[in-house]
Image 1: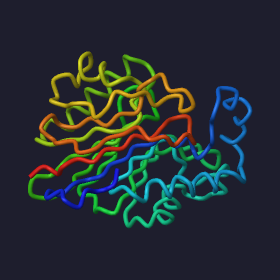
Image 2: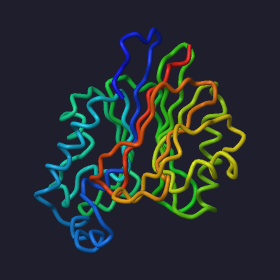
Image 3: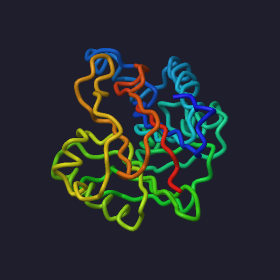
Image 4: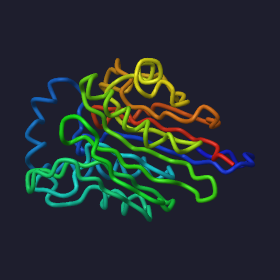
Length: 251
């Protein structure tokens, strides 16, 4: 995922990662053994965040899911701000989806070194607590990027994908990225986004990270956008694997 110096066109490197609040999960029993870390501080969490910061510093725009905006379990550290600073990124944005006060600030986030234009938070339909962040990159022919974390059930997913379809319908060029909790074949062929003119960057499994069988983490792009590089990264810290892509910016 390193830039090719011979590439004449401007490119954009994107990464999407469900970080599970900085909890390291390597096997199913960890969901029980480490469940306390969803409520209480852990000395290991800061080390895990440093590893994530080293990963994301190589990308222009980073979409993060299951990140905490500062509560008791993180010693009131806003993980979005922490990662932006540690990765030397200039911009960060938090979308708070479940405000549990001192017990949890469940959020989506965007971090980057490119200014995000016309950024908006959207509460997705269905059960409370699912959201999307929409913003533009560029001004003349802007690229719309939507970062989302979808519900688990198919009916709510379809409601949320229909809403996202409405967001991208006014743009020629769009990227939809995040933890979709379903695979790209269903999204592209059997969901309200099937006529949105998108294509999948990959079809590799990302969950669970230690033995992936489900392709939950997606980066979908408009069909005319050229994909230069893509990958599901071997970075098994969370229970999800991160996905990355380099695209040629639409002219």
